[in-house]
Amino acid sequence: MYILLIGAPGAGKGTQAKKLSQLLALRHIASGDLFHTAFEEQTELGLKAQRYVDLGELVPDEITIPMVMRHIEEPENIQGVILDGFPRTFEQSQALDAELSRIKRQVDLAIHLKVSREELLARLAGRIFCQANQHVYHIKFRPPKVADRCDLDGSKLYQRPDDAGEAMRRRLVIYFNQTVQLLDYYRQQHKLREVDGNSSIDQVQAILLSVINDSTGRVAKV
Ligand code: ADP
Ligand code: ADP
Image 1: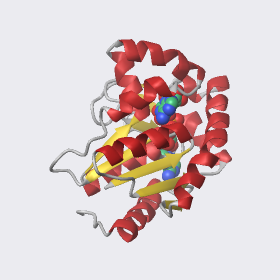
Image 2: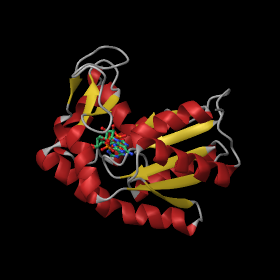
Image 3: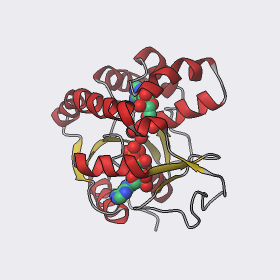
């Protein structure tokens, strides 16, 4: 089972994909996290990608596509894969289809998590990550128990520089420009489901679970 989560920066993709991957035994692949890890490890790929990430631009396809494809195979003992933040361009969707067809798989479901611009701005403005493991919090909507400290590993929390200012605005513009074609592509194949992502984390999770269950017949192990 291959599920795509498509949504603007701050829509809640990472938050939801993490929960769904636990509930449904899916591998969670987030392109943004792969770039972050590559940068932390100071790999050549990480260093090349970083200047685009800092500016709020998409990392070029010739770097992004091979990086994600290395992780795409569905491991045994897992129910499937949830892709968060990839594909973001039409070219990426084509590369994904080609790779999945090579391993005799396909995209089963593309979920568009729709959130109003006002809500996106509020989510990005308050988003904080922990330094050790990138666990995600929000100063108002999902505050840590102790200010500035991760509940799970105690590391310090920080704001991503590209969640503010010009980089943040550029990310939103690029997202809205690139996504129309991507959504059309999955709509034409009857694989697209639109989900209202404006409500609380738990409410959105419940809607996503029911959409996935309806579309694939999978039932959460709760
Ligand atoms: P968000 O949480 O805003 O959706 P991500 O953590 O997914 O952001 O991505 C952070 C940055 O990594 C993006 O602004 C972009 O520079 C780069 N990136 C992530 N995914 C892709 C992709 N599929 N194609 C190109 N660049 C990407
Ligand atoms: P994305 O991966 O799409 O960029 P995140 O999952 O990182 O988005 O969520 C963006 C911010 O909004 C985070 O600080 C997160 O805690 C918060 N958040 C996520 N979903 C919701 C929600 N349904 N209601 C309120 N805040 C949310």
